[in-house]
Image (tube, rainbow, N blue to C red; front, side, top):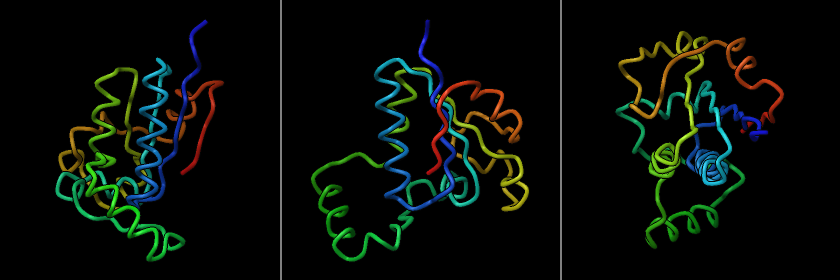
Length: 138
């Protein structure tokens, strides 16, 4: 029996939370577990072609110490969340979908999205793809 799909709803668009999504995705992909990312609101906004490599800040609770720690990891060569997701997709079994409602709300077209995004789907399609697998919300 194959591993069930790990479905992650990505809501937050801060770099620390997107890095968490990327690391969880890469870990599951390395183990051969399928991963389905569903990008909503501010996470979706971070996946625009012209914004994917920008600084998206950190969650408020990170504070100054968190900023220093993240900057030190970057200086030491840690891959960005977008690069980690690219590497995870190369392993296979990773699908990234934009939420159609969030696309409408933010007035984003598919042409504006980075090639990491595989397509656009609604909530019902997301739940159907998740099946009996685990769903995380970040």
